[in-house]
Length: 152
Image (cartoon, rainbow, N blue to C red; front, side):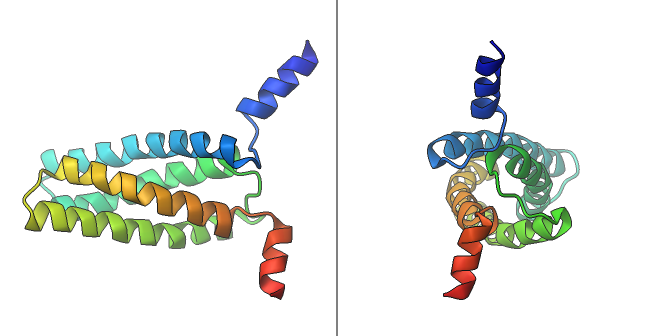
């Protein structure tokens, strides 16, 4: 029985190398971060009176902290050895996703007059692909892959 428990732990709890298992985990991590992100966005717009584009930036950054924690502990097995440097690199990569989010909210809400929550849902879909691929292939890759890339 302990062998079955170890196998289940490996499949469901430990970070994995297989993209087939990483993708649903990344979706779950993104969903959790999106809930935080969306909650902060709605709170800042509805209760604090912020502009939706500005509130989207604050929400995105808040959700990003949760997502980094989940990605390094659960989604990807090759987290950077230095957690602070890894978080900085994660944040830099996330700035592209933030740019996508801000541009979509600005374009759809401010210019097309589409409700900010609908614009945010579209932005979430677009940023997921950038975030997953950049994290998998640039930040959380195996050190042997990083060495091959730097030697090329």
